[in-house]
Length: 427
Image 1 (cartoon, rainbow, N blue to C red):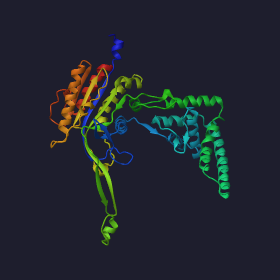
Image 2: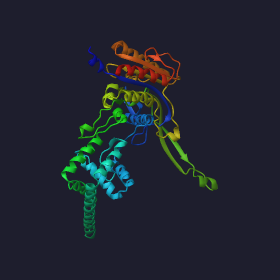
Image 3: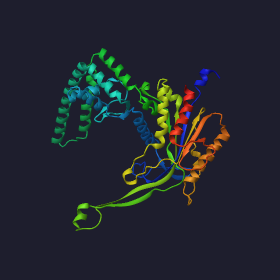
Image 4: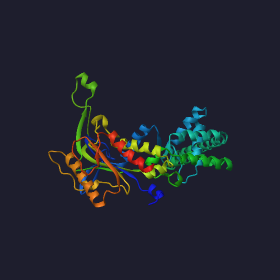
């Protein structure tokens, strides 16, 4: 193997957790009940990957001091910065909206909320867009004034039409649609009144901002439809977390006391009653980090890649899933954290629980830990260990795990062990 080809050997970090959680509702479905999934023919409590990614990303960003925002309110954020510089509020917002229109991305438009799609941008992107607006202030202000007048004329026309329909008992269903069109259309029309030369420059500069990335975006990825240069394939993949065993949702009846009535002593009974749904479970949680992709997403910055790797190894196990935390305080940590560095492909070990762990007087934890160790060993026997660059674990229990690599005394030691292995492969 040549040096060049060796440098591009696949490199993944697989993180496996066994995490016992208390009576809680960490991740709710549309009806407010704990999320579930059927696996191995049995119903399991589930924590969605979206939920896990969100809280892991937040934890990682706080640790790194690098933030990115997923939001529809980019125009409002840019306008806030322009207003602080002395812009009129209405002009500032319209100018920010013109920048979004000016990106000239098919399907990306405006609503009363901001943009019609979530944008995922580095925190610095809002300042950068404000700088573009300042650079082209004269052209954007003239266009904003034109849009404001067109919006006012269109609103007046829509109100007159609505009044006419009301006076004649006519159908008014189209009035809200006309008003929405009246507010959105003039901004796009005003953009076309800016000179072609300025439009071309603004478009290029806005696209550069929308394509910018930082460590958070490099790790978790981004997709903007119809703008492939903004798309970043995330280095982090995360599975839905499944309980290692079958479990049902539990219903909790609750009541709340009306303190004023209670203190008066004139009435008894509850001021409010209701039902809430909870579950308790031992979860298998899994995520993988593609080190090669992370380095590529960071334009070859291996130092930052190692920082992201280190904080990710802490963030995934320790990020708190805080739903209904005030009434359940579900602040447990995993009983086992196992990390493997692989040079072939990621390996999800959820198959250890395709047959659900049975309920016993010993609970689910011991059997769940043993099943993971056994399943990891089965993979090593079948696939060999030549492509495992290193493996280690740390645990709350004293159990010996034969197939999960070296035992480390703490999470910090585990992180140091894994990052040192990674450093040797990407140096």
